[in-house]
Image (cartoon, rainbow, N blue to C red; front, side, top):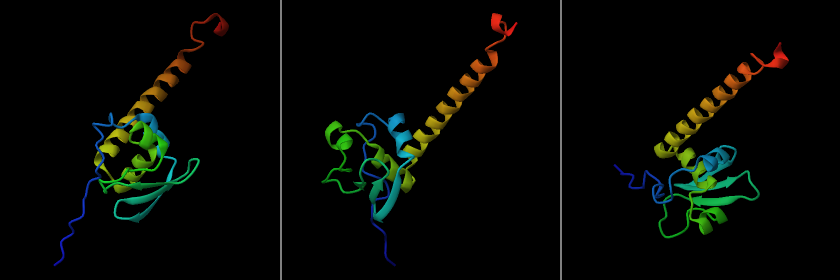
Amino acid sequence: MRVDTRETRAHVDLQRAGGVDPARLERSLGLRVRRLGHGRYRVWGGKEPHWVDLYTRRMPRCDCGDHIWREKVCKHILAAMLREGDDRVIAALRGLVSRLREEAGERRGRRSTRGKGSPAAA
């Protein structure tokens, strides 16, 4: 019997990188992701395609400027982590969806109260 010794969780320190940025997470949802091997992905949908490696510790995780120069968890890494089913990114996605629902509800509430009691409505 062969035991799979490969890593099961991406070597991405979300805490040190400041957590999952909601704006980057939102932009990651529009990207296309192709798995090329264990933890290795080709991600495209932006200006140019990028390579992401979630498990190799000795190299950058993504070849984009946002990750290399700003040292942030970029949208490409987040898209790959979503593809892997990373529970930390899925939890952040739940938070993003909740926030967007709240904002949508607030906008609906403001629209329904417009006109009530205003001189233009009379």
